[in-house]
Length: 529
Image (tube, rainbow, N blue to C red):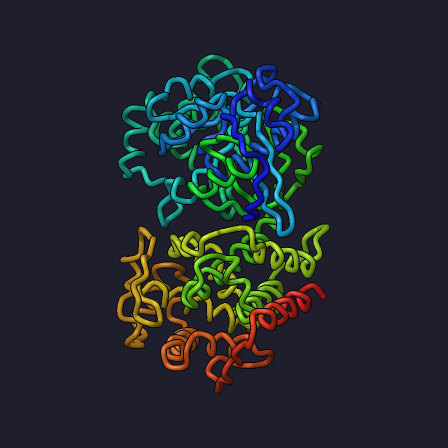
């Protein structure tokens, strides 16, 4: 982060103190008390506050309509409740660019409910006639769907949502109970907008709501199916978790005592399916793309951005780096990621209206290389049993089916497997953050036995099980990582026209930091051209 001190005096963030903060940061020119609560969000963590809430703040700033104020809620952690309550629901969004840092105080949030202690207040906001859209970011783990795609009604929280529906435990329990109450009182439904990074997030959300409603009352499920809408969306903004260091930075740099700031990148994108049953804010006036079909945009983002994050995470961590920015200062990792996107993943994507894929890839490389973003690799490596089947394995399976290049995709899968053993290439322990880490049977990979590989893939992506050629390639890469080293393995995999398993040439040592920067910039220049 940029460390320049702007003000030796700090002020507690509050509505009353906004005029004193206006000299160092952008503050709302509107009064949030003039807004009506049109949107309720379930799971208002850092990403939502940096992304969807930011667009609503921009909309309020335009004064196009006062109907789209925000009510936030938290389903798990109580921390945010006290912080926002002490600050009139205001918070700071800091944008860390490669060359500049800016900050803006967000004012669109009117109130915040901590659901476990304020379930009736949250249900009151959801059943408010002024509420027309409910958005949610509850992560993939918040969608109670089993491997068969059906609602996991045996889950403890799901059972509670059925037996004690007046006090919901899950986001979907709140949605169904609120829709039931709206139907009973003669109100129309709201649109339910998932902003989670899931394939088909609109249909998945609809299925979860309808299955839970069906288990409660088939007539309610039928009413929801006929009247409510579930638009799909694609969201994109890299937002690392907030740390004490960032809180101190906001105080030191901008003179703001903010207990819950959000630090993010300047880039932001939101693509929405035009399908709302009860009106929508004019988000197109603040840069949101409204399209009839979100899927091409979502597939592009998931395969290229999230897939590259998997590559940077596992390869970077095994290489000894701990943040994305550190890893992307390594020209070899830049080369691997660029060629992964350009030479393998992009070849599998259909054209996306209005998008130049080469330019998109170059933009991603610039974003990944933002040295001021301390995005931890541990975040990208977490929940690999969920991330890999969503972001990397579909590209690998499709490439194999088409007979397309996939040596770098194979390299990333091998790095994930190696990471999942719980030790790095030097024998040092790795803390594997994955609730399903014990299911695929990852132990024993150093013995180069193919059986653990089969179990690992079978537990993550069934269509790849039994592929003898893939198993042999993975086994070879894992052997090479141990015998030749990670850098030699990456060098061979990223060499144009090379095949995994060919002899390696050692990577030259850089004689100086400046030479290192020149090589990194050379890789980036090649990507830009």
